[in-house]
Every structure is written in structure tokens, then in C-alpha cells.
Length: 396
Ligand code: PLP
Image 1: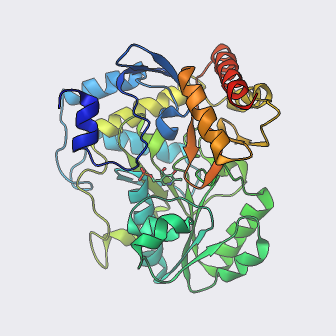
Image 2: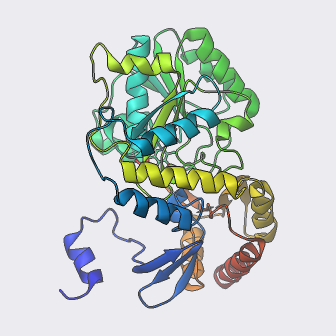
């Protein structure tokens, strides 16, 4: 075995028979360069992570400077670590009341697991409710509340006492009762192919949770951190969840997740039992330093301001007759075609033209776009010209 490609296939566990297989050498801004020196526009931000672009200089600087002080020092919640505290202050200032307490974890699924536990512990109830089409992560609890049966069956039994409602179906909300500990929903469903709940439905969901005392958990792991033009996607709906979960772009390129809730709700994790949720690496100081620098860049460089206009530009330029529908909020897009085969062929044709798109876990006739929010108008035009050429080559 001599090449990294050979070693990758032989030694690293594979998750699919058809990995992208791009051998990366360097990444910067919206660009990824492979080991042959070919440059690709990353229009999916490494799967909704690099919202401020790859290797933002402020993030690199923050990582380097924290490395001069300390790396891991103690599990989460024991030592007082300045990067954690500074990030907490910024996030708790930006988030609306009552979301004034933050708990750091390492990933999205871990944030959701903890939020589900929090709902059970706080309410003393057992039932957890999710939605059809949802993706909340790959661990047992998150998978139990996710909606894609094909991905779940092989791993049963999963969590007992769960139910799945349909988005925008008001009558389903009646199934949230005084037995329900928590209801989890992606504010905008990502892997279902960008499914956007109606404002009225979200407000009715909030009201039903209030009525029954169930905690409303909004998973903003893909839709948060500016992706839709607002820091939190729930800001589009005039509601505030009891718990919001974050990851992906939250770490600005470092592995990092978090959940935010009211201090009195969060307090239930510290007694009966004490250490109700713990993590060794959650809130790693280097990740917190990166996250804070990323958050500051997002805000100071006003990356959310033109998000809607940029999304609209993508939408207007991707007007091939074979496009059946574009579902979009800000810079979170699903471009739908008649079949999976078309999407597959277009994805490859885009890659050949230096554009990275990707599919969805639960919507195989659409491809996703989630470019860095600081993509320029010129880059959008360039990307769409390449994608149009790709679509023409495949579909005529
Ligand atoms: N929630 C949503 C909406 C996601 O899109 C994902 C990942 O794609 C997760 C949770 C799980 O996050 P992670 O892969 O960091 O565990």
C-alpha cells in the first residue's frame, strides 16, 4: 500500500461504497484544493459547517493563540476556562430569554442526546416526540427521534415511548400531551431536503408545548449560525424554544456542539443525579476559542445581512427547465429534479466542473447547496454558470 487513497480504502472504516474520494490538500474561503492542484468551489460548506468559509484567518489566529496557553485541562464543568466563559457570555447575550445558559458538547448528536435527557429529567416524564423526515444524529437517542425508517430498522430496539408527527399537520399536535417530556424538531428540516414549516404551525407547536408542559427542543445544527440569514432560524417564526441545539457551524471548523436553555431548566442536570450529563471533551478550550472567533467574524463582517439576497440570486440563476422545485431559506437550498439518477449525474458533472454539491439523506431526488455565507455575487454567478453547464451536459 503506497498511496493515501489506497490506505484510506484499506484501513479506514467506510460508511458507503461510494465515498466522494476527493483527496484534499488545502482549503480556504469557499475553495477546496485537491492533491492534484484542482480547485473546487465548496458549495456545501463541508456539510453546513464552514458558514464563514474554510480557515477564516481570525479562527486560525484564535486556535494558535489558545494553543500557547492550554489544551484539554479537565472535563467540562470543573475548571474555569476563559475561552468557555467568553463564548458563553457572547452566546447568552445574543440568544433571547430564556435561553441564557449554555452547555458545551462535542457534536450535534451529543447536543440532541443531552437535550432529550434534559427534557426527561426536567419534566419527570418519559415520552419524546419527533417528526417524520427528521435527522437528529446517528446515536441511539437521536436516531430514535429521527424519521428515516430505512436508517433505523437495523438498529432496533431504539428508545421506547417515542412518536413522530407530520410537519404542518395541525391535528398531529394533539398527540403532544401531559405525558410528553419533549418535542424535538429541526427548525428547518435539512436532510429531508430543506422542508420549511409554516409560521402558523410553529406557533401552534409552541402553544401546544406550553399547554402541556412539554419542552420544545429546536435542532438548529444545520439551520442555525446564520445559515438562514438570522443567527437562530427560530427568529423567522416569532417563537423561542425551551432548548436550542447547535453544532456544525458553531465550531467554525472545529468539533463543537452546544445546547442552550433557561438556567432553571438546565439546573436539573446537576442534581438527582448529580452529574446528570457529563462530557470529558465538551467545551474544549481550543474549540471554544475558534467558535468565539467564528461567531465574531460572522457578526462583525455582517455575513448574515445579504444571505437572503444571495440565496435569491442562486435561485434565479438555477433556472434549468428540469429543475422541478427549489426549496430555500437564506442560503440553505434544495434543488429538486425528477429522479435520483438525474441528481447523481448532475452531482458528478458539477464535480468535473469544479463545484461541490451533495445529496440529502432522506430526499434522493434533490441536491443540496449551503455555501459559505460570505460567498460573493461574482462567485455565485461563476458557480451557477458551472452548474448550468453541468445540468445541460446531463439533461440537454
Ligand atoms: N441534527 C441535524 C439537523 C443534522 O443535520 C446533524 C448532522 O448532519 C445532526 C443533528 C448530527 O450532528 P453530528 O453529525 O455532529 O452528530
